Length: 448
Ligand SMILES: Cc1cc2nc3c(=O)[nH]c(=O)nc-3n(C[C@H](O)[C@H](O)[C@H](O)COP(=O)(O)OP(=O)(O)OC[C@H]3O[C@@H](n4cnc5c(N)ncnc54)[C@H](O)[C@@H]3O)c2cc1C
Image 1 (cartoon, rainbow, N blue to C red):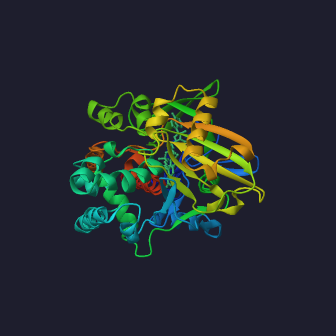
Image 2 (image 1 turned 120 degrees about the vertical axis):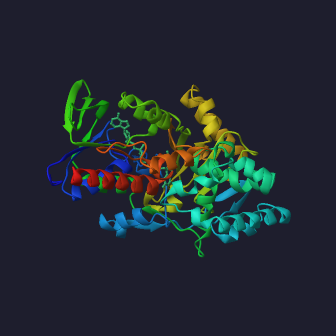
Image 3 (image 1 turned 90 degrees about the horizontal axis):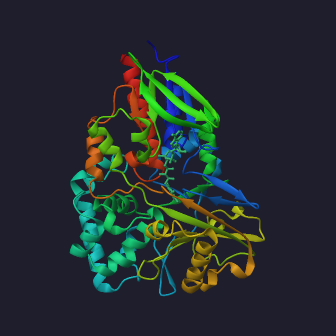
C-alpha cells in the first residue's frame, strides 16, 4: 500500500516528534501528534513574562546544526535568525574570561602556561580521532567511550584544565558533572567548535526558539493536553494507543508509531518490551536544573551573554544568561532579565527546598560571585521553574548504547524512537533523530 492514508501516531510534541511528524506528513502519511503539555516544543519553550522573553529550555542554535538551520529556512524563518554577538565567559575570582569555542580557546589566560600545553595535547587528540567525530552520528564515537571526562583530564591534561576550562561549560550548558560525562562527548563537542576556523557561531530567533517549535507545529495535526498512557501491539499489525485528555480517555489505532518522549518514559508506555529493550531505555539518566528569571528596571552591563561558574567557586550556580544580549528585543528598552541556573547536583539536592528559599539562595550566591549583576535593588519580577529532566547524560556507556541502537536491535519495523538521547543533547540531535525515525518508518511502510 502507498504511504498515502497510512496512519502514524507520534507521541511527544518536542522538536524530535514534530520533525518526525513533518517528514512523515510530507511523504503522504496521515499523522497525529499527541503532546501531553499545553504547548508544542517540549524542552524548547519561550515564555512571555511581563513583556520579556525567557527561554525555559534551549537557549541557542549553533552553526554546526546544519539540519536545523536548513529547517529554519524551509519553515520561512531565515529572516528571523539573529546571530548572538558575544561569547559566553567563565567567571574565575571575579574576572570574566571569554571562551570562544574555537582554536584560540587553547590560548586562554584562564589557565597558566603549563596548562596551555595540556590543552594543545587535547587539540592533537581531537585531530587524531577526527574520523570518529561526527556530530550527526554520535554512535561512531563509541570507541572513545572508555573513560569519563574527569578521568581523562586527570590522566592527560591537568586538574586546572578540568576545573576551569572543561567543567564550567559542561555544567553550564548540560548540567552534567565531568565524572558522569563520557570523554567521547567532550571530543565531539570540542570538535564541533575547533573544526571551524572562525569559531562556532551561535544564533537565536527574533521571538525566541519557541518560534521554531511553533513553526514546526503549525501544519500538524497536533493534539495538546493528550497524555498517552500505553501503546499496545494490535492483534495482527499496527498499534492501539491509549491515553487521556483531561478527564476524557481516548483510544487511537495506528499502522505505525514514533515514540518521541524522553527515554525514561518509554518502559511505562510500552510495558511489553523485552528485557533488553527495557534495559536500553532505563539506562538513560537525565540531569536536573532550576531556572530563576529576574526582571529589572534598566539594563545590565553588556559584557557577555552568559557566565559559567566553576564548581570550585560555587557548588550551586552553573550559569547565568542575559537574554537581551542575545537579542535586544527580548525585553522592552527600559527592562532587562537575568536567568540563573542551578547546577545539576544542586538542583537534585535542593529539589525539596521551597521556591522562595531557593531563589534567595541563588541570588545570594550571584551577589557573592558577580555583585555587578545583582538584580535585587532594581527587581520588578521573579519566577522560578524546575526542570526534572534537563539533558540526557552522555555518560560512559551511552555511546555503546547508541551503537546498539544504530545496529537496529531496539526498534521494531513499525515502531521507531526519537529524541535527543539518541541524536545528541541539543536541538540538532533531536531533529536529526526525529527525521531519522520518520525515514526508517517510511522505509517499512513502503515495503509493507
Ligand atoms: C535547560 C535546558 C537548556 C538547553 N539549552 C540548549 C541550547 O542552548 N541549545 C540546544 O540546542 N539545546 C539545548 N537544550 C536541549 C534541547 O532543548 C533538547 O535537546 C531538545 O529540545 C530535546 O527535544 P526532544 O523532542 O528530544 O525532547 P522533549 O523536548 O523533551 O520532547 C518530548 C515531549 O514528549 C512529551 N511527552 C512525554 N511523555 C508523554 C506522554 N506520555 N504523552 C504525550 N506526550 C508526552 C513531553 O511533554 C515533551 O513535549 C537545553 C535543554 C534544557 C532543558
